[in-house]
Length: 367
Image (cartoon, rainbow, N blue to C red; front, side):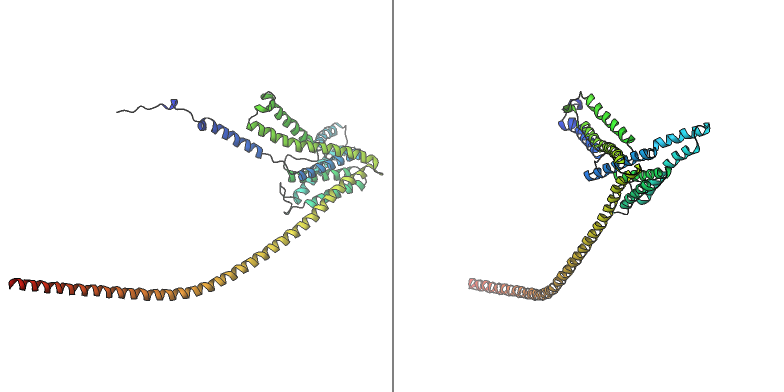
């Protein structure tokens, strides 16, 4: 008898096979998108924003003092091309070409010094990186530029300080963060806003139509915007502050560099002091933990010693009990053997009595 086979195409689709697999994949993709960008902690962002304000102030003060931008490596590189062409045409002298080249080289030397002091592109405050020394060196360069005479050497010192700070903050916050110029920051702000706008345009500007992946993309881009817009805003406010301070502080305009220098130097000293206090505190905690571990190990050893002594006593009693149990078993075997002998003897006596009675009955029958 043949059985009818139902075609696979006619089998009903279960909710698990129809809906759960795409939904699960979408949720996993949304989770990956959310993990792709982790917003720094608030105090870390505040640290970067304050340094961006210092860089904005230093750059404006440098231009007001010497008519040269210290942190504009793009502009200085373009100026190198202009000056080189003008030098060959006889329009510019070698002095202007030397200024542009030295500004780029000074920024590079500052970043190089940061690479010597901070060897990893991640935050590791209790490691071997000298963040405090880098901040103090940044402050020393700005202080020297505020008092040294001349035009080219002071602005080169400011450029070196900017390169040092820029590389140091890159090591802190990642490759997307720059605190001494905002060209890349504004570029990231514009592209991020464009991505968010395009997602809403595709969905008719309705949040309810966004799926999990699109919500994750919008959330990540919004967090990026918070960090990037903060950097741009503080850079702008730092420049505005530097312009006003340059007009208020008596003396040459470059004396206003003492304000960002004071902030970075104080921050470096504070970091070094906190790092030393924290190292001593951690060392004390480790010593206390080691002492507690030693005490615990000593207590365990004492407990083990007492347990061993009790086990030795228990072993002696167990041996005695074992010997007694052996004697009892032997006695039981003897009793068992005696009982078997008694049973055998009793059975033999019964057999004899039966045989005697049978002979007696036969004799009486014969009579």
